[in-house]
Image 1 (cartoon, helix red, strand yellow):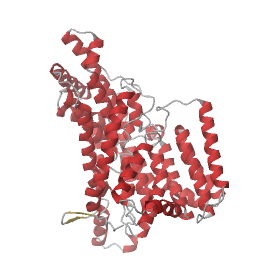
Image 2 (cartoon, rainbow, N blue to C red; image 1 turned 180 degrees about the vertical axis):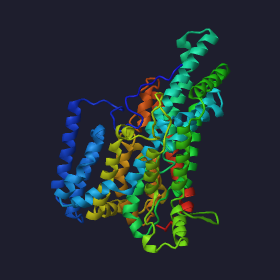
Image 3 (tube, rainbow, N blue to C red; image 1 turned 90 degrees about the vertical axis):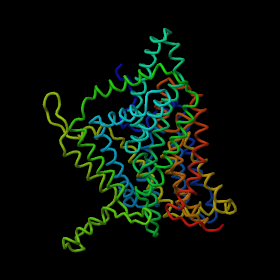
Image 4 (cartoon, rainbow, N blue to C red; image 1 turned 90 degrees about the horizontal axis):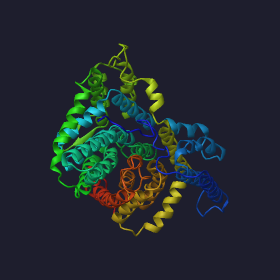
Length: 547
């Protein structure tokens, strides 16, 4: 049976498209008016004690943006441009200072990652990887679900979780349709009876795809947009103060084990009610054998883009020096510097300030140069084409990055971050650290069930950072768990784009998503909190001061 699923969005389309809920125009209008009214109230009210006037203005604009991100989620990129106009008008930042935030290295890191993902999709490498992983796990019902979980999570580490879900969903739906038809024929039952028998498998597989996309996404720096938002904020606020940058290698050392643990929890929760159904095992084996046969042997374009992918991933991981036990692993910029010195190059002419964005854009350029497979008409192609990039990359997410970084600059320069931090710290000075971390994870998880996780974390990071600073807590112990928790909204369709996409198939009851999701939300809060203390602290050498 051919793959048959027509999404409402393209492979790398914006996660802001209105797939999660439908609002009437009057409701949106009233929501916008309410957001404006609240913002103006903050602007015109008497300035609170200790708050600078510019901080009050920044709070007014930030509140307006945060509320509009909730009320009109399909217009998030437009709202993200507000700082360019409003910050200079209100004297918060100059136009030049504001616009710089929209072109940081983290914006181009994610742009390069998007281009790599498009090249992988263009050459069909992602489909081959997914089919190979699933077929190797096994063809029993539980094995099929775990196979989809592993394949989805692995792809989501390198491709956006939205694109990964849109890839895996047609494969899952085609397999489920094949299993239903074959089971009805083998058992001599009606199609509806076969569908009822396979419903636990269907729900587990489809929800598993959505949940695994989220779990795999937070494992790498380019897997989900919230991670670059955190790193951009960290580099702007804390790296100049002498704290170490958040490298891809350190992020993966911390988050890949947590991602695998969450994936195991998802698999256990989703498969515990699945019946054995031994009669469908040969059907599953045949299905994957036929799909792999349709792809044929690995083509030149696939091999070339796979090599580029491996080189890119290796350079991302080795972008910062890190210690592995007693061994120090040199970064590739250090190796390049040593090579330049060995060649007798003057220090003033050596490469400077290289990071993951350098790798991302350089390898993206390689993809536009290397030839791909020829078309049926014999025309030459490239591994990546600009027409694809222009049409399929969600440019809005890059604008959201810029808006978030501009907001963080406004919080810092006006003193709003410090004022909010002092206000919250005064109320939390006697709260145990584990309660603070767990409460933060629970709050972020709950908020992301109802609004964009990127917009949520963009708004919260300056507030959480200010609170951590005033409490004397290492900010990484608050900001990293909060960012990971933003990817752990499993309960509502609005929680993440994968949830909304899977709900759009009509095969997953909302009660099932809410039931499984609520349980997984609790597991996520517990796991992330435990990892903060058991893994994050020793791995990053975080010092815990007595409070």
